[in-house]
Image (tube, rainbow, N blue to C red; front, side, top):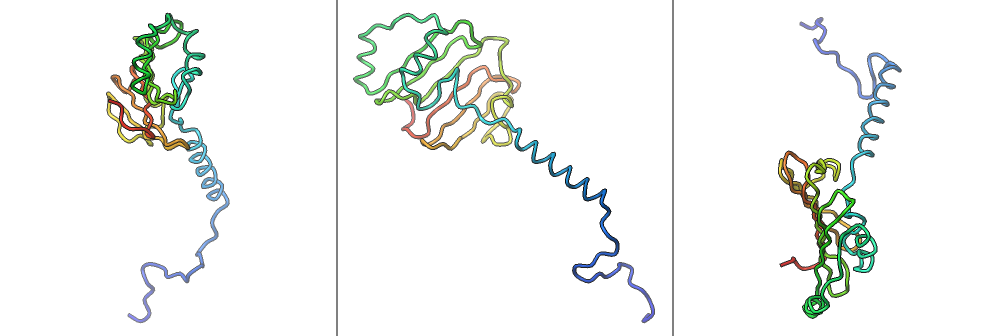
Amino acid sequence: MTGMKPFFPIWRAGSFPDPVPPSLLILLLLASSVVLAQRGQQTPVIDSILGVGIGTSLDQAHEKLDHLSNRERRDERETADEEREGSRKEAWAMRATDYTTVALKVDREGRVVWITGWLRPGKEIPFAKLGSLSSATAVTDSHAVWNVAGPKGGYRLILKGQNRKARVISLLSLATAPVE
């Protein structure tokens, strides 16, 4: 048995039996660039509804939403009651957008702490267009949730609908106490 060759060749560390063909190196380089390009093209998670996101001031929200809505001025007594409580909720019946209604709540400083938009029937948006499903915390056919870190504490994006298409989109601040 001393004259038998081993079934598997034994190589020394760092040595190869044959040089690596250049075509294989090119193929590996192309494959890695495709993977990197796909990662770079992942849909970032949305951070606003019609330009209004967490931390937007109430005045900025009015600038963005008033001209898109059928909204009339609110009763000042109702507004005063809410401001005494330290927060304020407002809603807009939308026209000329994919949303039927947009509602939000601002804190004592007049900054948006949550915003929700209801899409018109037939205007539902695939979950994957609103955020990369691979980075979601939870995904089913009827909802998807992301927790997004941000410089001001971050936010949670919640999508609700059917067949992985959003009918309701909500952004909630993670920097404030839970909304009642």
